[in-house]
Length: 431
Image (cartoon, rainbow, N blue to C red):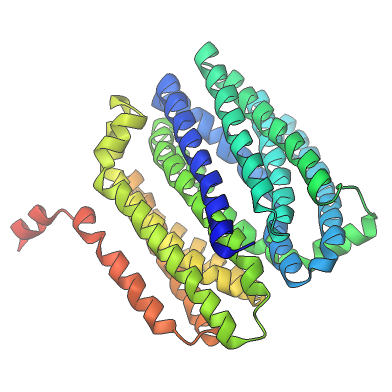
């Protein structure tokens, strides 16, 4: 299947998910209000943070390994499924023990959303197998059905009850339903997933440890935020921030689309520097264009987006949207270099830079959050993400021949955000 057709199929499925996701976010946030929505998002991010263990970076591993050696696809999928089941058992066992030892509030909400996050992790893993085998048409149909199913169930739950508990159950039933559909589709068009030997699964876990650590560094983004802001500013700040972050993460699905289309292709061309460079330049261009376009939409139409999606209760979000737009662009720039590093097997280096990202971000947050509140946290993420992009690019340039062209393209894109970030009237008055 051609590159353009793969991008079209993945793009169309992402478009459906984006629209359905924005409608769902809008209605849930409006019905619950900033404070109750903040409570839901706090537990949702806590559960997603916990469920990261079950992902273990296996999705990226599958895309790279099957792309490099399609003959091993069935073995890789089945060992991955078994490994994920082992991790899931460990996660739930430890979570149950800790929840009852510390008398955790809202246990039902937490475990319901944890089950939803784990189900989503399994669905994403199985879909990766379809993408790696060029089955983008099937994945598109699954994603479209899943997006509509999720929207209908969650919106019905929140509209009917205005309850955080029932809304959480809606999230679980929608995610579990998608997992069932995905499993049958993978079985019909690719391979029926089944449990393999524990020793083979454990060996797979050891082999993919560097992917797991790298995924943890990336997966914390958008998850640890609620814990930091709830501790520093309270649940209403979490609700305001997560309303913006949900829009950000909805657009961020485009990164998954681009990675899923290009990673198997570029992984298969690592033996030829010329072919690898050409494919990598395509990745860079698409990432930067998408990052700039979506980021500028958030910056230019901040007021309209907030009013349309969330209503007047969330007006405080308007001044934050340009910063979300800049963050979106920087993250996409970093993501472009990250795909190149993954394709050449530089996961250990990615992990080290990912750790550096969180060190920089959290150190900055100590000073910026007390001074600028939610904006301070987003600024910390922007500067940390810039560190991430620069760190990735230094390593990636060893594998490319058109490095400075991409750097220049990125700088031009970043400059476009300056009019929306700075208060130029105040700057002129100062000088």
